[in-house]
Image 1 (cartoon, rainbow, N blue to C red):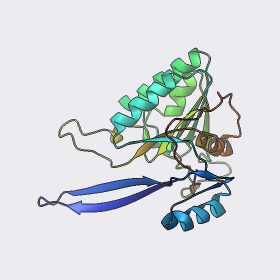
Image 2: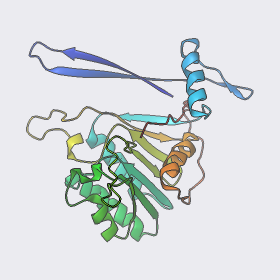
Image 3: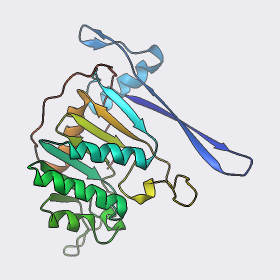
Length: 243
C-alpha cells in the first residue's frame, strides 16, 4: 500500500509547486500475517475491511513524476508484451502521445498479443478523432464505459470510469493519476509541467489484484504469464476507486 503525502508551496514569484512524498507499508511474513509498522496498522486494517483484499508481499514499485518517464516505460512494456495487454484510461487523447500508444498497441496485436482497451464513454470525447475509432480500425478490441445514449436517454455525467490501468502479460502493471495525452508532458516552451500527476510501475503478486480490477469493468479474461517474485519486496494492496 502506498502512502502519498502532499505539500503545497509558493515561492517568491507566486508560483505554486506541489511536493509529493511516497512511503510504503513494509513488513515481513510471520506465519500468514504481515507485520506492519504500528503507526500504519490502523490504515492497513481499515483498507483490508473496505477492499476485502489482503496485503501482499514481494512486490516492486517505481514512481514516475512526468509523462515522459511514465509513457516511455508503458510503451516499452507494450512493445515487449508476448501474451496480453489490458489498458484502461479515463482520457485517451489522439495527439502525439495518444498516437504513440495506438501504434504500440496495434503492433502488439499484429504480433499475436491479445489486446483489450477500456475507455470512458464520455471522456473519450476529449479528443477527435476518438481513440476508440482509431483503435478499432487497427483491429483492437475496445469497450466503452457507460457511453451516452439518446434512445432511451441516458447520460450519466457523474458515473465515470476514472481508472488508469495497464497490465502486460499478467506480470507487469502501471497505475496512478496519469491519463494518456500530451497534457501530461512538459510544456515545450518553458519546460514546466502542464499537469502534476504521478504514475507507478508495479510487478509482483499485486498484479493479480490489478488485473481483477480491470476484469470487473470488462468481464473478459486474458492469457497471462505467471508472476515471478521480485528481488526487492514491498507490501501492496489495490484500493477500489469510485469510478
